[in-house]
Figure 1 (tube, rainbow, N blue to C red):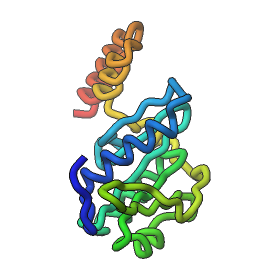
Figure 2: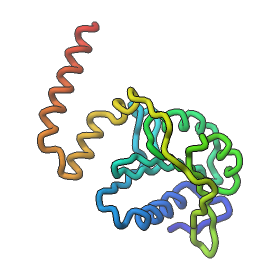
Figure 3: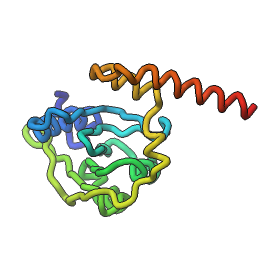
Length: 176
């Protein structure tokens, strides 16, 4: 791991978060951890996501980041995530926590002895209102197929994916 500084970078936090989540989910073999998971037709990417029957997204705001995109991220994440966690450095903690809904968990990233750790500042809960259309548009078809293939679960889905693509192509040609 890179050596942390008072202004910890996204990559440092991401490495520590992966380790933290691997411990959190070590007894749940059906949990898959993703990085940069695109949602809402690829309009935004979740920094880190844990998928295990629930979709839990983690948005990292390091001390070196800005909060410029956070309100848009909150909007899109709230459409599809079952749970969300803001992972923030000390410099953004207060302001960022005000910008996320109260159902979001908030974790503070702290650094001591060249090691990053996470401290719960606010407990999260289930998202009270997801958007059905956004859930349907959750992933691009190609991304979904790659995910299934990577897990050895694409058998039987490939033909359905081709049928779906053909149907989309036909609808698109009728609109022209």
